[in-house]
Length: 81
Image (cartoon, rainbow, N blue to C red; front, side, top):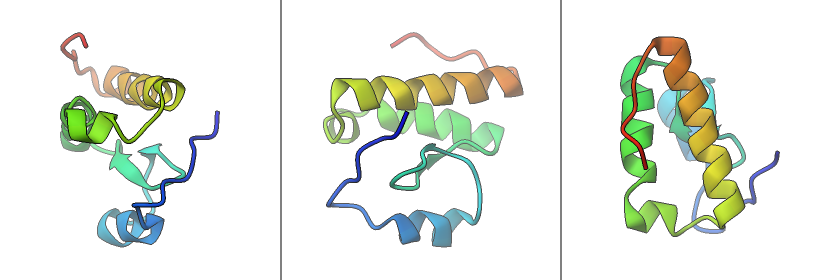
């Protein structure tokens, strides 16, 4: 499921900062989920109101699901929403 492009984000910045990695929001290259540390950080950041408010409910749930899937791969237990 494609996530809407955000006008306030430059996708090149995420790729420049993290390289060619998996992102929970691959459209905007936000919330890298390629390492255990990044998965934990992505979960924390997407739950901050200022970050979550940038997405509609469907896109937000898609991002959270991608982070959950990555957490499972790394054996990380995430706190509930």
